[in-house]
Structure formats: C-alpha cells, structure tokens
Length: 160
Image 1 (cartoon, rainbow, N blue to C red):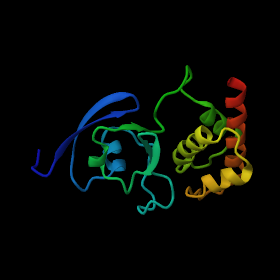
Image 2: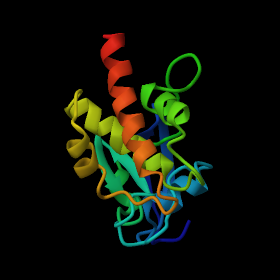
Image 3: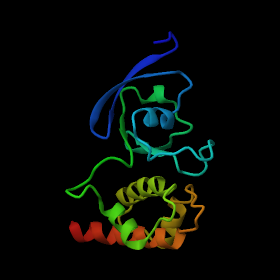
Image 4: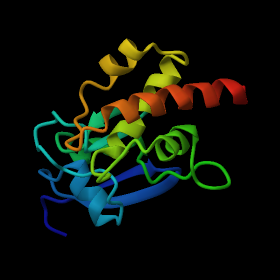
C-alpha cells in the first residue's frame, strides 16, 4: 500500500466494507473495483445522474464524491437487494413501464425516484419532472420514466 493510500471502513448495501483508497479516487472507481458496476461515470461533472449513489440516505454524484469521504458512512447502490425477488416497487415499475432502453441512466433514475417517493409519496407529474431534472436519458425514455414513478407510488400506497 502506497503512503498516499488510506483504509476506509463503511457499510455498502448493508455489508461492512474495508477498502484501501487513493486520495484522488472517486466513488464510481471504488465501486467498480469492488465489483459493482451499476453507477457509471458518464459526464464526469455531476450533471447527468448516471453515477448516482446514496450516502447516508442522500443522493450524491459518485463521479464527484471522493471515495475517502465514504469513511464511516452507509452507502446504497442500485445493487442493493430488495424483497424476495430482489426488486422494490420502483424497479418493478421501471420494468413494467419499459422505463429504460439502453439502461445506462436507469440506476440513477431508480435511486432518485426512491428518494423522491420517500420524501413525497404522492408526487404530481410536475414534481416528478422537477425532482428528476438532474438525471439525463440519452434514449429519451422520459414519458415511460414518469409513468414508472407514478406506478411505483401507487404500488407503495397499495402496500401500506
């Protein structure tokens, strides 16, 4: 281990992790080294949402967030399993509505949709569009994404 490396400890998708990180390494690079490829670096400027992960419950741009900042945090990625089939309502709704094409942006949209529905269980279409405005889909699946978030909200309400 180089003297510039630092050992960090954090919880990743419910599992305790210890990792050696370089000062310049970002979260996406660390996650990929750990075998998780859902968060992807696309724009490298925190503008597209493809690299979204949640740190202590808040969405962050993994391309701009240094891995060393994860020390003593709880990190959730798209790879976090939910339920018996591994999918939560948001993921089920995205699949049912065809709210993805190439899938590159989908993890960021799913994580942001979860965050939106946690804060606002009954968002209007305008609120959904506003909340997801920091995520870009190059395939233009926006109508399907809006429908998926609306469906996920209905599924969550029916469950409670």
